[in-house]
Length: 190
Ligand code: ADP
Image (cartoon, rainbow, N blue to C red; front, side, top):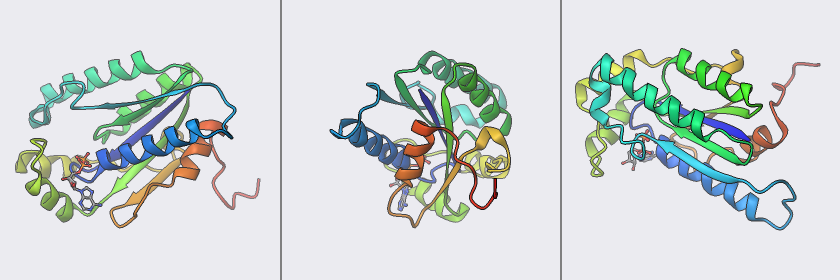
């Protein structure tokens, strides 16, 4: 039914935001005023797919990791599911590929860009106690290669940006994007 792609620097807070998005969507689905189809919300992340952080240490294992993620996305996309992809999703072409797979199945899409300054990501990464820290050189490399999402390209649209200072995710906009389809950017006049 919908594909929500979460993208952002390593250790920028993507998993926290993915959890917030899931919570909001589930709350709306459980609300008595919701009269739409019965849907389940699935989060696909590196951990559940057994993609270790070290996979991002070199381009070959990284390619395998992306393949694993893409296969999982394809397998999960369905009319009765909201799929949240909580991974780096930092390659433009990969986001395009996921978007095409979703469109093929007439699944709505949106992208959530989790924004935090590189120094903050480095700090949060070094403070991690969950065993999910990236090696410092891998983190530096990923920061450098990160391809920022853009609302100007259709595969990243509609695009929601969440800054590290935001308490919460833009739940209303995300909900409308996945239940009503792509929102026109404001002030287009058409
Ligand atoms: P990612 O999924 O991008 O790797 P996580 O959501 O797992 O990031 O968060 C990485 C670390 O950064 C965690 O230890 C988390 O507590 C911390 N963190 C994330 N977002 C914030 C924030 N907005 N403020 C403070 N700490 C944060």
